[in-house]
Image (cartoon, rainbow, N blue to C red; front, side, top):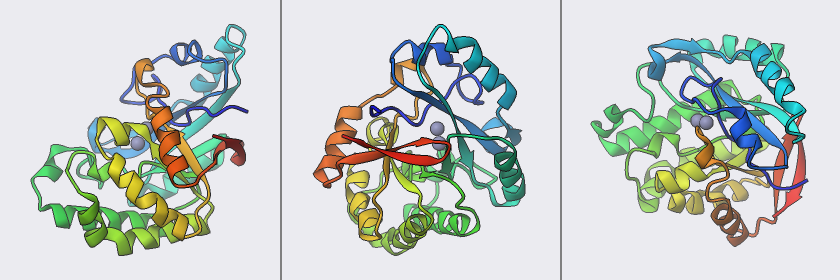
Amino acid sequence: MPLYDQHMHTQYSFDSEAQLRDYLAQTAGPVITTEHLEFANPDDGGRDDIPDYAAMRATQQKLSREFPNRLLLGIEAGYYAPAVNQLRAYLAAHPFDLTLLSFHHDGQHDFQDAYFQTIPLHAHVLTYYQRMLAGLQDFHDADVFAHFDYGLRIVDVTPAQLTAWAKPVLDQIFALIVQNGLAFEVNTKSMFKWHNAALYDLVIPWYQAAGGRLFTIGSDAHEKESYRNHFAEAVALLQDHHVDQIATYTQHQPTMVAI
Ligand SMILES: [Zn+2]
Ligand SMILES: [Zn+2]
């Protein structure tokens, strides 16, 4: 089994027009999509964005003869406390290979909304991670903890600031995800498009100190051009931290792949 991208979106996500065919054409290896499952989404007029499961499977079926890649199906589950029962119900009713768990919004604003550039940085960082910790205490039935830095993408936080402001909370977060067997995602969009590579370099040892050994790499592509973006750099970063394998998921079971 080769290393492959485990975070990408197509037309079944509210914010992507990408076609599955365009990713399939770029590799003979496994392809997995992780569409957004997002409740009360402020980035989409407060709508519940629920991927059409039957349509996703039908699209895979239609393309499977032309592209004999190994097709897998994942989901990016966005946590929002008031909708946790809907989240659990959807996941229980629909089989996936991989569940990413994400913290994208607070019910009022997506954490990439410019609103968060208008509030004090220290307060924003602390609140973001406290909400995340509370969310993980409530819900952690997933395979991968996606883009730990999502709420920091549009603000500039240095490693020293993150350490001073949020390390105690992040240590609790990492303890919880290790306890529940979640992998840590190296999100190359966060690292390079949003310039947070130094924060990944900072916290990978925190996850490891909590006992974390499972890692995935995801491009978070919303268009075909971003597929597998910067994977060489992500692999190099992991190797710097003495990680020599990553986890790939089929029916929620990890298979370790050497990097
Ligand atoms: Zn996301
Ligand atoms: Zn995503």
